[in-house]
Length: 402
Image (tube, rainbow, N blue to C red; front, side, top):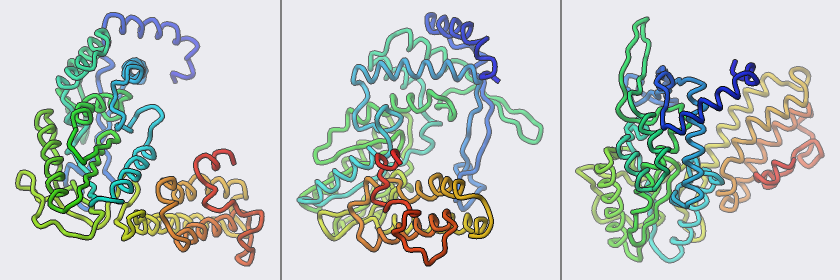
C-alpha cells in the first residue's frame, strides 16, 4: 500500500522523519508491536518455550524511520572504525562467508605448529535479553552523536507488545530486548557485544562473531596449556555475560579439538561440563578434525548437503518428467534457485579441502538435475553443452556472471 502512494507521502514523511531526528523523538504509535510465535524447525519437543521464535510485527512507517536511524548510527560507527573487525554480522562488506573464511584460516594457521581447539558460544535468548541501559551506555562510550542517542532513549521508552491467543489479547510494556523483525535489532546487538570483542585479549586465543554466534579459537604447544587457555576464554566470556545481563547456554556451548589427544580433566564452568564433540556446525558449515595439519575435514558437511539436495531433487523431478511438466527454462531456474545454492553455500571455505570423490558426488547431483532440465535421457554424457560447467566454476564470482 505504501508503495502505491509513495509519490503522495514521500515528502510529508521525509519532513516528519527529519523533525523526529532533530528533536530525538520516536512516535509512540510506531513503538507498538504485535507478537507472532513461530515454531523453530527440527525441534524434538514443542512443549518447550525455547523451541519457538517470536517475531514482532511493527508499523511499516515506523520501520522506515528505524531504517533511517540504523543507517545513521551504522555509518557513524563504520566511518569512525568503532565496530570491531572480528564482527562479521550485519556489517557492510561482511557476511557468514567472511566469518567462516577468517575462522578457517586461523585454524589452519594455528594447526600447523600448535594444538588447536575451537569453541562455539551460545547465549540464551540473546536478542530477547539485550539490556537497553547497557546498549545506551555503550553508545555513549562509542561517542555516537548525542541526537541519535536521544532518539534511542525515545525509541526504548514505553515500548509495548501485544499478542492474541484464543481471541484474548495480552499486552505488555517491554523493558529489554531487540525486537526481532526490526531493522535496528542486529545493530543494537552489535553495539552490545562489541565491548566483548574489543576487550577479549587473551594470549593465544582469537574471537570471531556473526551477530550472536560467537566462535573462539585457542591454541598452545601443549595440552595442559591449551586447556588452561580454553578455561580462561570461557571464564572471560561468562563474566562478560554476567556483567551485561546475558546468560550462556552451556548445553549448547561446544568444543571441537583439531588434535587427537584428550584433555586430562573435563572442562567445567560454573558446574557445567562443556561438551567436546567430533564435529561442529558453524554458520551452516560442518567442521571436523583432519589428520593432516594442512587440512580441515568437511566430509560430514558434504554428506549433509548431498542428502538434502538429493531429497529436493527427487521431489522436483517427480513433477518434471522427460515427457511432461514445466518447460526447460523453469526447470533450470529451479536448479539455480534451489539445488545450486545447497551445493555451493560455503564452497569458498571447503572446496579446496575436499577430495575428488566428494567433488564427484556434488557434480553427480548437478548432472542429474540438469539432464532433467534439458529433458535429456540418462545416456546423455555429462560433458555435453546442455550441462552446466563443473561445480568448481560455480564460485560466487563466476556464477554471478553466468
